[in-house]
Length: 129
Image 1: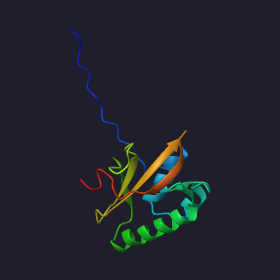
Image 2: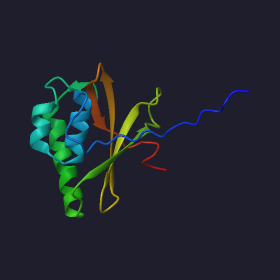
Image 3: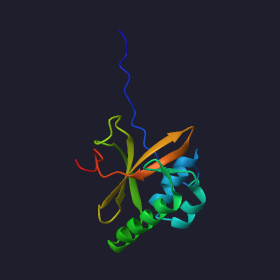
């Protein structure tokens, strides 16, 4: 008779100061609402809606960070979701304010632990649940 293995839930601690790859560094900087760090971390050639435009993305994030801070948030918690509008169900990160519960979703594509595409997602599965 075989023993039934129990699955352990793995919890990622993004608030630590050690990160395995560039994508984790970017997501942690977003969680910290640190636009200065994002300027250094996000590649110049990152795609937004199939257009390379790092500074358009950063300007958008800066506006969202201001909204979160105005609502009293000091940190954005992360969770995963999927885009309901994309035919391929793109992976999304949902950032939720630690005080307000307000949410901001980003659709992303990563290759070899590097984010090559990052854009706002208004059709995130978990965000609209």
